[in-house]
Image (cartoon, rainbow, N blue to C red; front, top):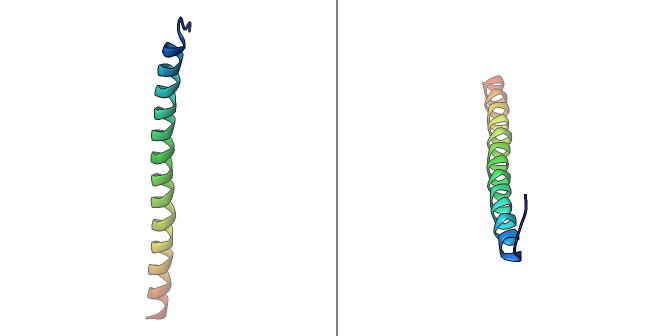
Length: 51
């Protein structure tokens, strides 16, 4: 990829950063849902054992 101006380079870098930030947010949301669902399942199992 060839950049003729500094502005072209910065636009490309900015787009790449936005894509990476979006992927990180989606990954964090997926991880959060995985961890909280696992805790909820574990908590539900422990309540069933006591009753």
